[in-house]
Length: 211
Image (cartoon, rainbow, N blue to C red):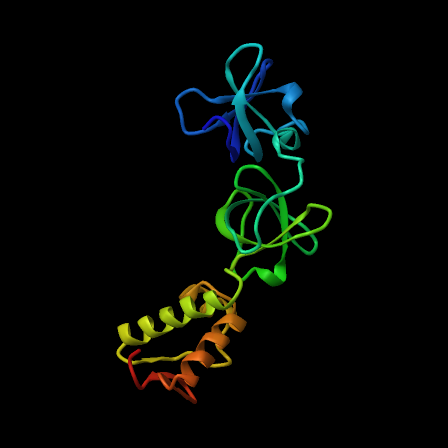
């Protein structure tokens, strides 16, 4: 859509410019002057889709910085946002949030494989004094623990009162089941144990009382 950022693949290159496949019969033009680097056929690039002021034609640009908000961020910490993964850095990932500005998050806050162009939900972790934004993929705070605890109970009930989740369960399995880190899952399990809703056994978790 006009105004969106997206990862699109180069369909062809002509004397006019580069054309991207955007799912329509007529490919999307990226003029040579709107290319951050000379595009190559078959490769995919993050671009911004917009109306050309001179021609009124829908075009794209890989010079995405021009279309992002540079003003200080006014996001509240904990707010849910949509992320477009744009690149991987040495310490994590760089993403466009809510189709408006850059933000980053570290690999330590990511518990799933991410790919360039992927859209995932995220949360504002912190807005720094310099206006830069730190992200996380999980909802911060105690409210998140309660949501995860509910998911754990629902899964135990669905599987007959027992699930084989222990301290040694791989992080990937935890994320696939509950969408959270192992640390958050352990906190939720601890909260359920304190309420005497579950028993923690050597090979898993058993339901002993329904909430």
